[in-house]
Image (spheres, rainbow, N blue to C red):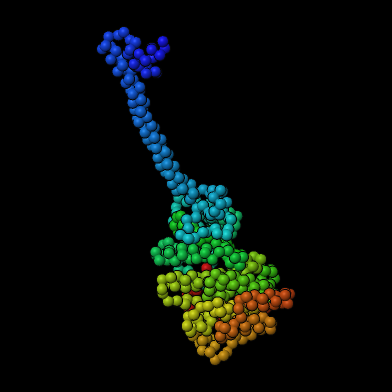
Length: 454
C-alpha cells in the first residue's frame, strides 16, 4: 500500500513547491503566482542583503579614512606649531635628558652646542633684538645679566667684527663673543658661525675652554664661552711682573713658581696632544692664546689660526699667515708648512714666556731677521732664573729639524717629571718693569697682519 502511494506521487520527497502544487485545490493561475513568489523570494532576500553590503561597507571605510586623514593633518599642524613656538622659548627637561641640547639655541648645521655640557639655558627674545651690549653696563640682554664690555689687554684694535663681553648666565660667569652686526658682512657672518661649528666639533677636553652655546635665534649671533678668571696668560704674567716688581703681596695668585710653570705647561701640552689626535694643528701656541682660571688652571685657546687653515683648505685657497712671526717654526716662516712639530716649536717659546713673566722671544731681532738667524744655527738664549731641566725642555722643542724635536707625548712625560722636582717655593722675579711700547716693538706687532686671541 505504501509502495503504491509513493509510486503514484510525481513529486520528489522534500519538494515543498511540488507538494503544494499537487495538493493545492487553488485555480491554476493562483497556483502559478504562488509558485513564482515562493521561488523568487529567496533571491530577492539575497539581493537586498548584498545591496546593503555594497553600499554600507564602502561608506564606513570612506568615513574612517577621512577621520584618519583629518587626524593626521591636525597632528602635523599642531606639531609644527609647537616646534616653532615652544622649543625656541621653553626648555624641555625630557628633551634635555635625551639629546642634551639647549633651547633657545639656533645652531648652524652640524653644530651641537651642548655636545659635552649639561647646563640648561633659555635665551628669550627681547623687545629690541638688535640692542647692543656696549649700550649697557651691568645690564641684562635676554637671559644674560650684568653684561659689560671686556677690556682689551693691549691698546690696539684686535677685533674689527667681534666684540667681547663679560656676563652672568644661570649664576655662572661667561664670556660672550658677539658679532658686530652693524659692521660685519655676509662672509664675516659665515666665518663667525663656521668658527663656532669648528670649536664645537673639537669636543670636550678639560684644558680647552668650554663652548656653552651658540645663539643665532635673534641678531647679533653670539658664542657663549666659559669665563676664566685671569683671562689670557700673557696679561696674567704681566700682572705678576708688576706685583713682584713693586714688592706688593696682595695678590697671592701671582706668585708664579717654577713648579707652577711645569704644572700649567703640562695642562697646555695635554690640550695640544688632544688637538693633534683630532688632526688639528693649532698653529698659534703662545701665552696670548692660553686662558687662566682662578685656580691657575691653564686652557689652550686661540683656535682662529687652525680654523682659517681648515676653511681655506676646503675652498682650495692658500694659507695666509696672520700670527706673529716670532713664535713660528722655521718651516712655517719659509714654506708655510704647519705640522704638530711646528706646534712643539711654539710650545718651547711659550715656556720661555712663562719663566720670564711675559718677555717676547728673540727680543733683539726683527721678525724679518729671525729665519736667517736660525739658519745660522743660533738658538734662544737661556733666561736668568731658568733651571737647567726647564731649559733642556725648551731646547728639545727648539730644534731646527722637525724630526729632531720632541714629540708631544714625550714632552708631557718630561714636564711631569720636571714638576715633581721643581722648586715650588721661590717666586719668579724679574729685573725690569713692564714697558708695553717696548714689548710691542720686540714682539713684532708692527710687522704682523693681525692679532687675534679669541
